Image (cartoon, rainbow, N blue to C red):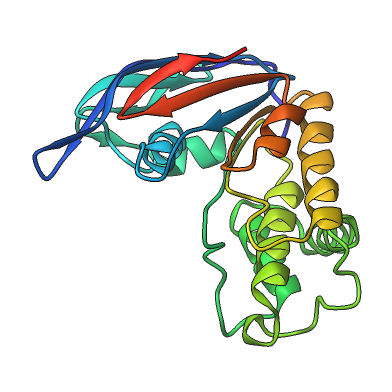
Length: 224
């Protein structure tokens, strides 16, 4: 997918689920080439915010716009549009397809988006090498450890070459050395022009980002 030098703009996002306000009037403008950390305690709404930004969850109020069009608004969650525009999500828990190999989990989403098979396999190999899984691509998901599965999920996000990369706890289950590699790869995506937002509980990871926002009880504040 082409890198588009466009901001991701969320304005007045409120999400209410089961009578509880998960997000409370959240506004966030993320510029291309930026690497931003999203911190906050468990249950603060970080994952919910990322899903709204990805166009996968409709907010109760407010709008998320990318490339001049709304991808999320009340009654609207247009994940297909967001995906076509290059908004990539690396979800917490990786959501890999168990019957497929690590490599196939990276290749198939690219094929769905119209990437040629040759290009998709080339990108997959580069992504597997980048996340230090070059020799494990042929293993089924169930044969991989939790940390390896997480790296495959990150590799899938990198291979899609999106204009926006939303990563939810991408360093969970990783050792310190691998954590540094993954954060470095995310920073490189921002340096290449992408909008990168990383939700994390890890203070070291947050410190590596250019900016940090803190979410607590649904309210967003800028830390730096």
